[in-house]
Length: 225
Figure 1 (cartoon, helix red, strand yellow):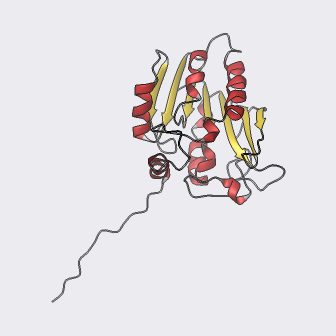
Figure 2 (cartoon, rainbow, N blue to C red):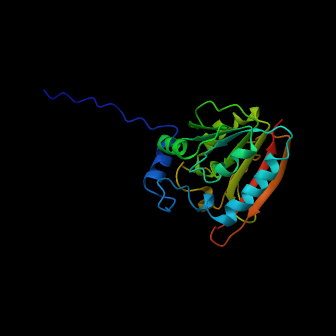
Figure 3 (spheres, helix red, strand yellow):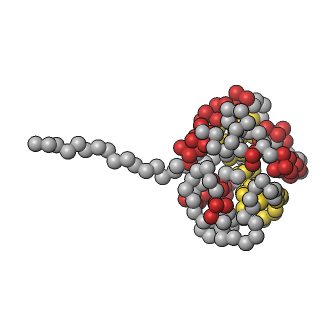
């Protein structure tokens, strides 16, 4: 008598971002400048990075008491390293453990801390301000919604997203990974359905348009409470 082997069913992970981002860095899917970890042109092109550093420095230094900043999706830290000195404490978070270990070895400051977290699942660090720079554009609506519910405890949320130019249908869903909603002629707007993020105030900080990048890279400041 043949007995059918009962193999365990493969369970699909509800939060695929960790595996996707590990693959991105392992296979250099965002390009490589011979560094072990490279977060792509969006984190290294001077015409994208320098204006962002300028507006963030202006914002962070406008306070009498420096802010505690949580950088969610810090990547290779090419940008964060230029902001640390303008904060009371800078907590840099990424989902890729090897990347966080590498950053800890490369970047050191008394006010700097690195944490490996999945921001859609894990509890987030306490702070005054959150930076989400070209992070949400890579993750599914389900994960975005999960994160939004955690942002209400911060006073300031600064989000940078790669958006189509002109009018577009916002918030088309994607599978978490290397790609972004731009391929669907869409982009994130957290104030629109299905997210409906409630904020006290909204201010556009920066828009960068370059021939090398389709669409435009937009940075927006939200005052949450």
